[in-house]
Length: 92
Image (tube, rainbow, N blue to C red):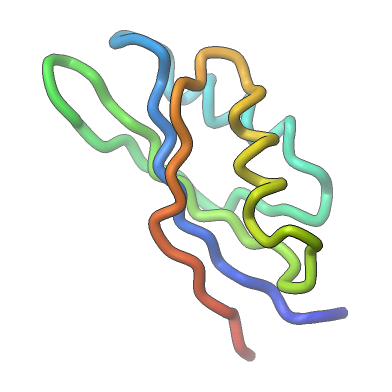
């Protein structure tokens, strides 16, 4: 098995009041088996809008880096924006 990277991602919903727990579950279901949603948290933005902050582990050697991951998340219902905050290599 190759190395993994940890990716921290901010996901904005398309409007305030979106059920972020459900959105996180939908994102988890949309991910291929090589990707692992390790945890998520809600982050207040402004005016009642909250974002999801995700920690996802993925294989280091995936073609295109995080762009495939971004595209998968963007296709999930109620997702407006996806921003990669950090990528770091996991070492054991």
